[in-house]
Image (cartoon, rainbow, N blue to C red; front, side, top):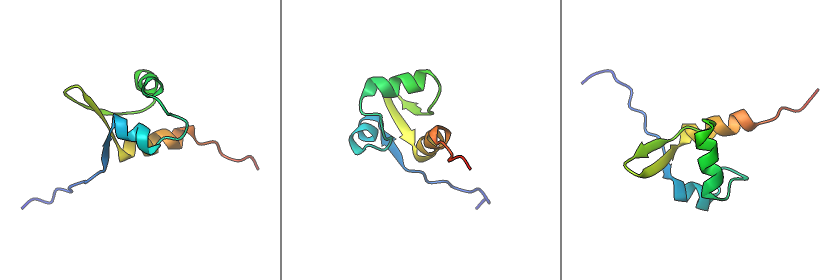
Length: 70
């Protein structure tokens, strides 16, 4: 057995990301498509399906976060 670290990450299909509201403010597929094309959010493509990993969503939200002044 090797010393490899196995990462298990939650992945959601595009339809579930929208249905569950995992990304606040993005409620339709077109907006999500535009974010992908602008390379603002990462994704996995398996055949014709698009999946978003937990780290993709967390990175996107972290980049969108605004810090309070002061």
